[in-house]
Image (cartoon, rainbow, N blue to C red; front, side, top):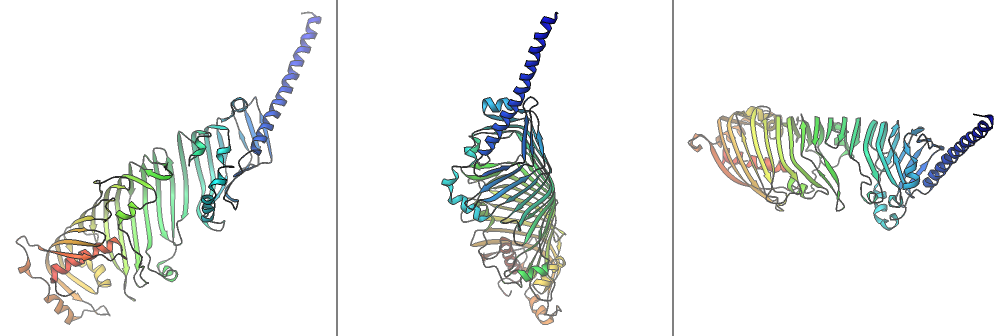
Length: 525
């Protein structure tokens, strides 16, 4: 090649290189400016701040210094969501789709050590409800871009949720990891309550703590959520105060809770909004080793509010709940009740508690019923089998509860009767059958008992035997002449429900009525 040819060719190549550099510069500048202009046109409810922004069109990179995102809601312009990040870099950004197709397409977003806070108050809810017209403009619906993100990862984030202000923590976790696949946002999804679609998600966090009200906290060791299952490990619900401290801060009687479970497993969870109402449904929920210890001080003033039965509670839920099967395995339940000053609380316990509950739902139609099938050991000793059924759609709240209790030394009952009824029992129940048919107002109980060597002692205020009253009471105990050929005494009675008491108080009144009729007829007690 002659020098005459080489020289023009070199000049052409240099010009091309120069043009490439210029094009690269202008391309980067053009995209940077376009992105910055887009960020200026975000809805009024979104604030995105940053120190600087850089792009490299040919490498598909985006670098943002000190980004901070805020979502603002309500007429008071309160900040609901705040996300602060260190500098972050995005790779494989498709600027061509952004410039030509109005689509922001990201291969992946990885956010490390984010600081996330969220504030939600009743006032903001009211503001949002009362300002629907104003929210039609300035919302996500006005963001006319299409956003596609193949993979989103939030790793090792600190998340704090506040109830009403930043001095009232509702939820706290120092290690949250969230991943979404195939995120898609556009004008259509923006209209939905969950404003984007996704193919799958994975949430993993530990040491999560909720403030669930004025008196209780909920904590867990680990939470894992995916599209196919949710798992909660080492869940605990506890009263914030000790039993003695709780007595000082409540004006009406309230249970003191110490509840924990090894794990809670939810299969095939599905949730969302339908016709503006939230729904949740799943195939099965399994709770491993629930341990419930509940204490109530009856010396505190009664809570005289009306207590609905469970059928009404399900019927009146503000969400649509569909749960075909709820399983409780290897549980333990203990209830303590203090009724007299200076006397220990009486207790009732259920060991080896296993239950299968079908159709826990307010979405089924009659005649489908909710059914609880329970196997346990009453007072840790006597085998107990109970079946409890009701129809959520029955507004009279009709139900049937039938139970069978095996061999039970009645001395076990003294854990409750001595402290709460001033009665000490001797003898043995060979078998107990109870069948309760009731509704919201009253019930009918059929009670059948086979027992041996039954004796009771009436105790005085000093917890000593009152010989005179004990002798009189034992005179009224049924003798062998009242027994059927099979050795059972069978009686039926009626019970009026005290609607200010719980459903378990209603069951206890039926059992008490049955025992009274079996042992003393329509006489004393």
